[in-house]
Image (tube, rainbow, N blue to C red; front, side, top):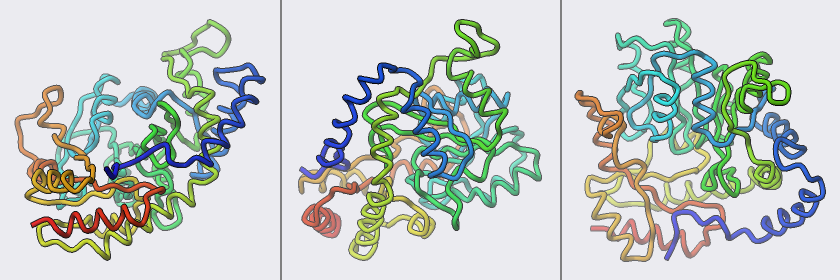
Length: 355
């Protein structure tokens, strides 16, 4: 069976990490120690941000961002992942949902520009590893007095021109969930910023709001990047560029080789910018395609089966037609750096043989 993503194929990487574990144990500090501090600096250099604050996960990263911004009404594309909406609600904010367009999963900018819905914050999600049009959204938000926030959970090593995603907003969130392009061995996340005051505030907020031992000076939660996960990430970031190029190569092969009138490939924006985190295809017979590929020994996933406004907790009466259509058509094909040539060929044959 060909997996959609397999996390335990890179034995060489595993051995490198194992060698560091004895050193980790000898240091004897397992929370907010050497590895956390070093990873925050290394990752900041990688994405081009002055400051990085490691957190327990990206959902907490977004929660902290909305709390520090004192957001009240947050705009979000209805095709975004569930954790984005949960972070907004948990921060005590109202969610204002916008539709996507075509099969992108990105905000319909024309409708957003014309919208009279009042928001103070817009969360731009770089879905599937492709770049949202944040360079355009940033300009619109500045004119409307809206604070732009980027969710880069799926877009590590994704660029717009030469700028890494996360550099179009004051605050941006990142995820190191195991299936991400830079994934640790458990949960992990980060917030990035160039603002020193926000950085120092976030450092306190992720650690109970305290500045000195057991003395809170502000609101805070317990959401720290585990020290051992920081060690894992320090090793994995060394090969990230190489692995992402392997993902992009598979993207190019799929683009050139997939040929089925029942299946639509991702948008041009995807192929121009994506890091290959996911490879979505679209079909009005999505469920049949999924079953066909399963019979061929190919695992796939749906990202995501329900738009946010159709989920019970976030339910809205109105219709967002493109988001609803996308949820019924999207299917993610296997893509990961260690895929073999034979596996790639089998996926291509599986899709092309669907009738």
